[in-house]
Length: 254
Length: 334
Image (cartoon, rainbow over all chains, first blue to last red; front, side, top):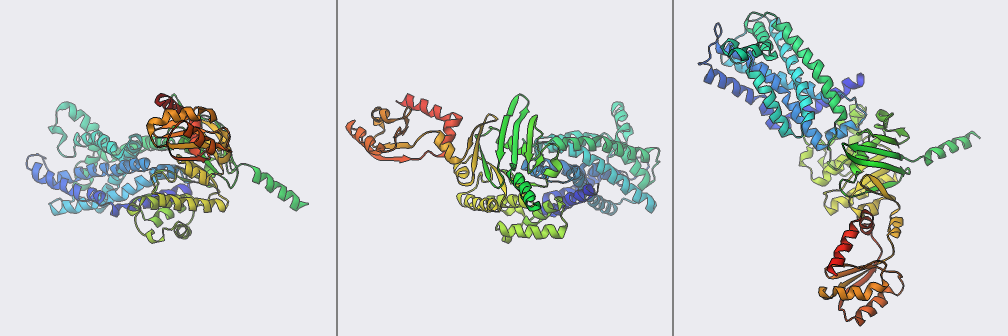
């Protein structure tokens, strides 16, 4: 167990040290989400009716949730790259904890997610977002975001080990996760969607988590969303982490 | 008395092969990548695993380094079973592959420190060991640069350094010099020879026969997942027969005449390759004089003519059956 913790930290450190040296990735964490916020607020904002809330207030929790869910993309791309370059073989030939490569990768995602959450909050505050929350609620919201992002990192970890190349990870991941984020309450009120989509959107973990964030940060009604989001995140981890680790154990570069 | 007993135990241990493979089978779907391989490698020696692409060389290395679980058979490396003692075995082996597995966005030193720490060393210790290895593999000047700025040869050396971090008694090198320029190959060969001189056992796969000839104490030729020949380079060369006579003709059109003239002194049918005629001679002594006489009598013009020992290329071609194809071509040409 101590070995697992140490090795996980070593791998996480490796993935974070690389980061500033890969400027394209750094852009993906910082500039890209800011661009999305600006586009949504100023292009769609005027046309989307969000009763009771200013669109900037409505949007920011949603776009941050989308963003942390996609934070795990780095894990999918990175694992796929490591696999193709033979680094996974190297790791597997070392006497290290078996789960550490994945646990370290996903842990590094938590750090990068925290970074992009910070960037997004600052951007939001500049364009008119304001918290309607206690300090405890703000911190609780951060916790929910990081947990949700961490859960999706494990989904992406499995994806990265299953596909044949980083390019494939990119397109499969995008096709799988992008619609999920859009058929949710992240960008528009669910009530504005056709009935079939509404039914899906209401149980979508994205909706649950976005609504939990709105409850914590802008004083929307909480319902069961806060606990719902935590349960969703833990369930996703409980399913995908063992699948990803099992896949890692038998993965062979071929 | 105790000393004698101790020495006895040591000798038994020293006699145990560093690598011992029995009846190894591994299939991928319908393909039997390894089809019953038996192999022993003596401690401190180099085994060259030779074979064409897809022969099973890499599968073999992956099974021996615990990356693949065999379907059948037993593998013992450095005294440990590769399946049941996999975790402990990983502490005693080093693996350097043909894909130079280093993190391109880390510096040379950072790569080695990471690997050292994953072997369980503390950061300071790992750093010290990393610096030692960088010095040994002539990478000190590049220690602080990210690996993506390295040349192919430097990456291979860094990959080898990573494999050496734990000072493993058994080292696996999967095509260590594939794609390197001649200068880098020579450098890497010298480094491997140094390691062997220090007592490391090496299993090396290669497609380059000169590499096996230079580095290997023993060679196993593998094809279709089976070991089809095993021995020292000299033994294998002896197996494929005697010395080769090579005649370079002044005029390629005279090849049939040359073949007819030389057939009587050849062991097996001579092979024609454009303006060259090659044959295995029955008797070495007097072969050159006899060949010149016969060709002269037949009125064939000769540019160059010589006897040479069989190379591992000849061994390889003969054993893997490609020589037969060349022989067919020769017949067609004739």
